[in-house]
Amino acid sequence: MKALLYILLFNLSAISFAQDPQLFENTWYLYEVMSTDLGTFYDVSLINPPISPYLDISEDLTFNGEGACNTFSGTYELFPPNELGYMSFTATTNDCGIQQHNWFENEYFSFIAGGFWFSITQDNGGKVLSMSSPLMGYAIFKSYPLSTSDFQKNKFHLYPNPATSELFLSSKNITGNLTIKIFNVAGKLLSNQTLELENQTAIDVSNLTSGMYFLNIEDESGKMEVKKFIKE
Image (cartoon, rainbow, N blue to C red; front, side, top):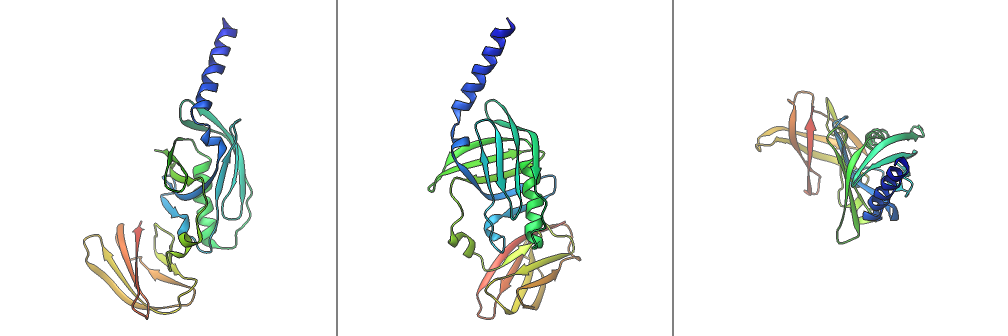
């Protein structure tokens, strides 16, 4: 009887693997991640300098990947049909030398080390792996890496987001005076100031109450970009 039960459990596991072999057939490139535990969100295309975080999952449910400068590995447990649970996780702990990269890795590794539900869909470029958990947050991976145009579509990069007292604004290509305006979600202008950007500058948001805001950035040529941020 016990042997029959083991055979039944083995067959159910084999069926669950066969249901979604795409999970193991692709290298998954991270596009965005949000950690409920840490309360922060990252769009990988906005991280400066650019990085290429990825995740590989094998059929035996061992996994490995890379963040900004550190690598990780571990083992998941499959709960049919589409839940992966955490069994083990290890990562290197090098300082990436760029604070935003360190913050990002803290977010990404916190999510990867947890358990989540997953689904695989299709977009115009390839496969899309969506992972989500009420406790850990969510992550979106795709079977193809970010293109150069994805990284260049935004001139300005804003972090950390959410922020507590300061926002850091950076750009690889823009220097000089910037007109910075902060609006609330109702469209009310709360702040209007001129700042000089030399690769990176800090914006004081300590007087704002908790909530969502919009940062209007205008350079000396009159070109404008709007960024959304959250004040904790």
